[in-house]
Image (cartoon, rainbow, N blue to C red; front, side, top):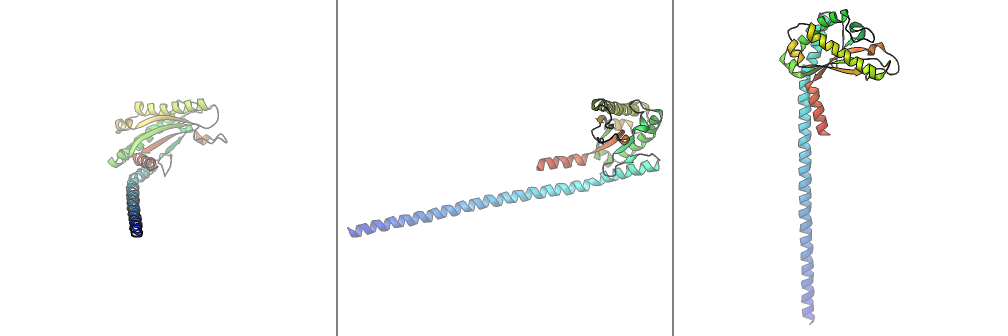
Length: 228
């Protein structure tokens, strides 16, 4: 009887030990699986990080045409004695209200028409002077801007009417070699007093801006939004 009980106890202990060993093996397998998944995720994150960095480096290299375009615009304006303010970072060209319009009016002055007749052929000529320039500039926007003086809605309408007046004059009264090509890239927009100094009436805020939209900047924006 004692011998039988000892055998049973031994069998129970053997089963317990076997179960413990099996449990440890299962835990080890689970740990290995978790480690493998963790390594895989880390590898994927590293892969996508490298892709993102590579894309940014490629885009940085593509910034070269943008800088060349802006440099060419600045150079051509100076060599043709066209007095405009060019933003060296964006290529935006600001033309003050006093050159184009009488205050509160959207009708181009004679001197404004004369200015555009000199400015547009040179400006458009830079855009289409090289294929890489033409490809990099996806859009040219003519933006009307006002100061913060007066009613906001009226200012917005005035700014749009002014940009439309400039647009219509360019394509109805000015003849230049790249006219058809430019018409496919350009549009008019009214910005009103959105970018004006609202603390005071600043005459410098009354202007028309020729603004480039660069294809490379749009790609950067898309990549940034995707990464988020």
